[in-house]
Length: 264
Image 1: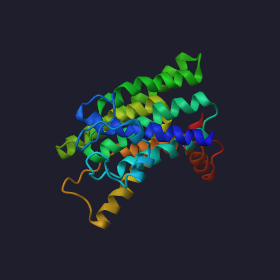
Image 2: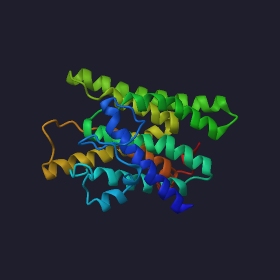
Image 3: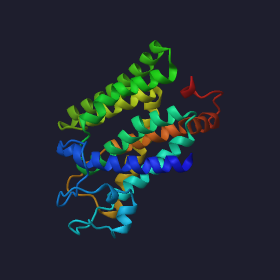
Image 4: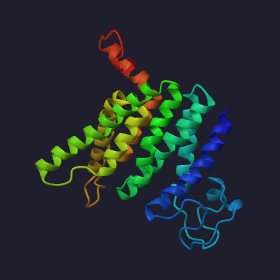
């Protein structure tokens, strides 16, 4: 099953590259792939994940222009996340749900936000409702419990970040955080619940701080000194889904607690 998960991840990663390129341009994600330079259609046999990049020497077959290294990297990353998600899933349906409906949207959001500092509403808003549906599937037939779990997650995720952004914006008299981050946090709350949001905010803040320090030390920060927070929120959420129980157990038991409050 491992090899199947890798192949599936590579194929999905190729589609995610399409989404990452087309969504910010308001282009349809359906239809044939085309060269981003000359816009000629790419035949199916020249659209194999990673292999096409290797066989063509990192250049487009039609116009001989360089192909961004992003394409094979996203395909490889998606394959790795697909495999790790499979390892942490108890059933095949759980793997498919969380990989396709949680991990993949977060990859799209992270890359687009990192490159353009925007989070497309076409991803974050619909997936708030999808998150509720995924949790309902997992706790069926307890639909009331699912609504409570996801509803509180949406309120805590989106609401707390909105409140923080509002306070900082009023103090500094400038926008402290984009609305996309708030909607993304609401989406994460819908999938993971309100307790996970505490972990996600804490871990993502640490990751963002490490990134900011690395930029400062390497002197590679651009003129726009804002740092996109979406990729770090996404990383925090993925870490929580994969290893949240292990990390919080180690922390609380190491601090002398008799139980892990994240599991209550």
